[in-house]
Amino acid sequence: MQASRARLFKEYKEVQREKSADPDIQLVCDDSNIFKWTALIKGPSETPYEGGVFQLAFAIPEQYPLLPPQVRFLTKIFHPNVHFKTGEICLDILKNAWSPAWTLQSVCRAIIALMAHPEPDSPLNCDSGNLLRSGDVRGFQSMARMYTRLAAMPKKT
Amino acid sequence: MEGASAAAASSGCDYDEFQPQKKIPMVDAFSAPSTSNTNPSSEPSFVPSLEKEGNTIGFNDDSMQGVEKQMTPFVGGKHDIPMVMASGFEKPFVSDKEPLSALAAEFESGSPIIQEKIKLLGEKYTALRRTRGDGNCFYRSFMFSYLEHILVTENRAELDRVLVNIEQCRVDLFNLGYAEFTYEDFFGSFTELLEGCLPGTKASLSLTELLEKACDQITSNCVSCFSSPAVMFLRFVTSAAIQKRAEFFQPFVTAASRKSVVQFCKLCVEPMGEESDHVHITALCDALGVPIRVAYIDARASSNPANPNAPIIFDFFPYNQEEVQNNGSNCTDAANVSTDLSKQENPAPLVTLLYRPGHYDILYPL
Image 1 (tube, one colour):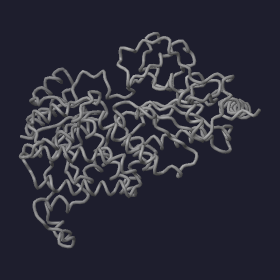
Image 2 (cartoon, chains in turn red, green):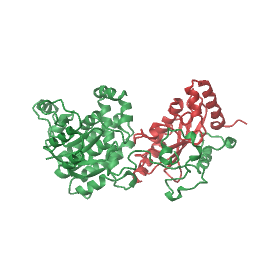
Image 3 (cartoon, rainbow over the protein chains, first blue to last red):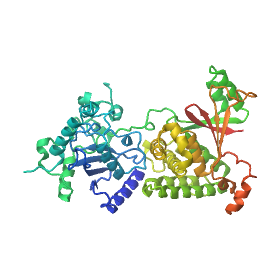
Image 4 (cartoon, each protein chain N blue to C red):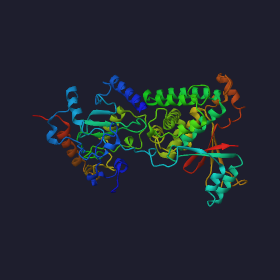
């Protein structure tokens, strides 16, 4: 508990210091609980997520950084490796490839990279995975773009 | 799949789509005690439904406020421990010392070659200490064996020597671009632990205490818990050593895994539970300057015709040999060392491990 708190505090300071370094990621710690963080990430360009802003929720275990943070999309996203209903993310570094060398910030970067490079062969969202696996890139992109517009963009009035 | 509990649900890549009803209630497992684990009303409200999506999400502070409010009901989530070392193993991380006869007894009805090898092993070794087979056994065995060596021999010179190497590893990681805060805690706790192995400080440990602490679960949350942090320290050190000599290790890494050196370190060295092999042992031995001996016991006959059943002994000597040979002396003159190099005998191993396919334990010489 002590160790995780100390580490998270260091990450907090680092995030404050590097605020402008990564304009695509805004990582914010909960006011009252250092084990809860939120991130806003920008959808990578030249992907169907471009122009969208996606929220991630981080829940950090007491054994952090020996155990990975739990990260979920709060914004609906159509992506083979993100559960459509729960926002759970299938990403090796959040499971067995985790190591303390990763940080909350670098996890965000990894998630942005996953958005740009879906891995349809290990899908959490089978519909999305199947579109890509069957070669229907256009179908996948239009679905993904539609959900980006519906859920991840400001509504035009 | 009915009992697909936390573990299965968290394992990620299985097709959760097919069992949408089995969603685990979203309970904050961190700040709330586990008794609140049954809260069916807190449904997994992942996304505000599309109609509610009128509120814009932007990068300004105001919208962030809204975001946090929205999140409140479902931030947290059921926390499951996804990794091998978390639970479900009856064996302690490091067990009590056993006579070698215990190993012989285990193979009583097994392969005669193994029996013969164990018998021959008994001519040089008296005891073994088992470690848990959780993928960290090499590091854990090394860690305990080395600390025990320092503690039993009260070898201040060796401690001072290794501290210099550890400092170098810290610099190496920094130069490799690792963020300092990701590894400094592990380094700090390990050097503290090393100091504790020598008598005369407040933090000094007895062998019993060392063993007790080596068995700490990472889930036990105690402040002084060192077993897994120490393993992680060794993983960082190993990773740095491989990357530092990437050119040397590249062919071995590629042959074993078809990965680049950096990928290999990220995926096969740094994560807890990833098993170790020659590459890892060589690198760790180099980095800390600690010679390691490994006795291999398997059911194959050895190629040595004179003694086909002799256990194969592998010795790992540090690449940076002058470090080891400086042990106890103050000789830092590089030229001096290099001329001496050829005359030096190989250093005696400080750590001796028993390898059976897939697992490392600690071995004690006569």
